[in-house]
Length: 434
Ligand code: HAM
Image 1 (cartoon, rainbow, N blue to C red):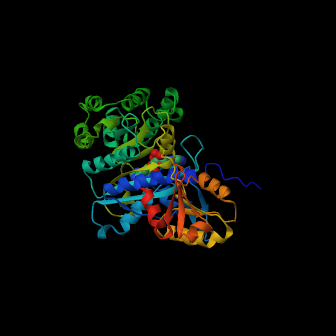
Image 2 (image 1 turned 120 degrees about the horizontal axis):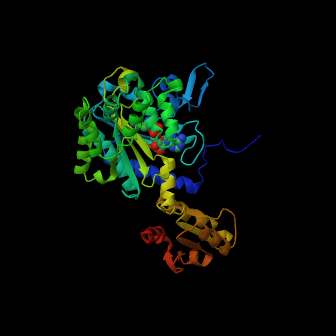
Image 3 (image 1 turned 90 degrees about the horizontal axis):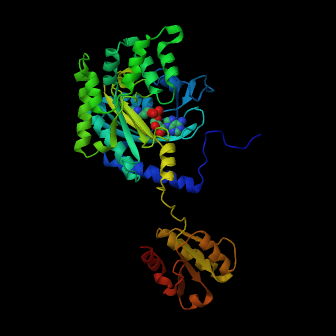
């Protein structure tokens, strides 16, 4: 029997857990700044919640099984369908736009590789009930501010922004039929991970049943469009082109007004693998593009209607903890972990033990992170443990100190020692903290 953890599942030792907490705290701070409220849903869901809505990529990665009640269930691979169901079930009672976020663990049976595991935590931020481009700009600004909060700049990470409405207009203009659009999206999504001949073959379809050769070539041309002016030029004369471009242009204008346009690149390669996006789509990448996507999202105006029968537009994104964690580590942006113990209390003789326990408990009541040796041992050994714990101060209690109603406070960094009255000990330790 193997006692190893499963491939793609992490164990969080205290230092890893501290890094994770640092990330989650930053996520919560920034989401709060945008007026987002936290929610959660069930980690196990009916299988059909995903088979119908998420699209083939995620469905192929589901952790699903039949439970003891004969139900077809799946561990959640993403939050969006759960969120859509939750909001739809109370849609009338909720003030729009709804601004909700969650931090939850997801499960996908993926091939394990750098940046992709079989479990990960995601921050999901979604804005529901706002159809206009200010909603899109709002969640993209939130995403950028998450990067800023973690110490990253626009040289470190880039938002790659596209819009399926623009892409659809260009693809239709290139001769792609309505039925072929999903195939074109799938090929564009794989553009950076597949060689051109394989992409062309994908677009042509098995035995040439897909697009003609010139149409396939034009699809790949569309996908290589970067920058707004190039997209504008390509849209000239395309039916519906101007209307399709308006939301993207307005989103960029709003981001520019916030001073955040320098973080964003228009890039039509971005289509997103998930099936439910209807408009704006975006991903956050490290600027060198050496890592997988840090975050991804977009507008999904039909999902709440399809899942819960309510007509509510929505836009949002999710950021995983794995790639951003790798990037922060690479850049040395993980903060040094806070030592678990601030104050170590040491007794000189066995008779001092009750006094050590009493002071330790007072310190803990005062909010000081406090430890003492759990077995009788020489002072030197106790101080070694204090050092190993990186405690800032040690308090020494011996028979002579007790006779004078005093304790010794030893600063373990400056190596200075002073006597303090027992009554003032906790106050002195608190004062020494700042
Ligand atoms: P997604 O692009 O599938 O979108 O995932 C979002 C982020 O989760 C990715 O950019 C990545 O950081 C992280 N992620 C995904 N899969 C893995 C994995 N196997 N291992 C590690 N990290 C991973 C969604 O899930 C959408 N539901 C996002 C959304 C919210 N759209 C609208 N609202």
